[in-house]
Image (cartoon, rainbow, N blue to C red; front, top):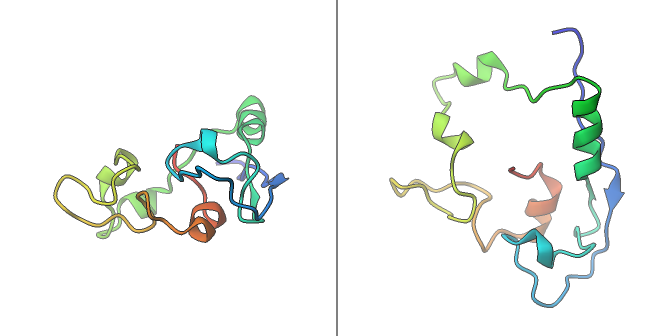
Length: 105
């Protein structure tokens, strides 16, 4: 590793939730971000174009707490196939949490 870079949180939307908002359907978000700064597709694409690639720290992946299913869970479900709760996921996730954290995908 020569360098580390996080895509810039380069967009601050409004705190006005649109009617029909569905946290599992980005097309319903409009410019709503609960007034949080968020990354944009262009920010991720610029990092990739500059030669950066997504990185999962080896130490984290080797932790006894790591679950490889985290990288494949369907975010639309609040629980995995074994009934294990996925914190911060599902239709009822508070928008404050939804936009304050990095999004899956």
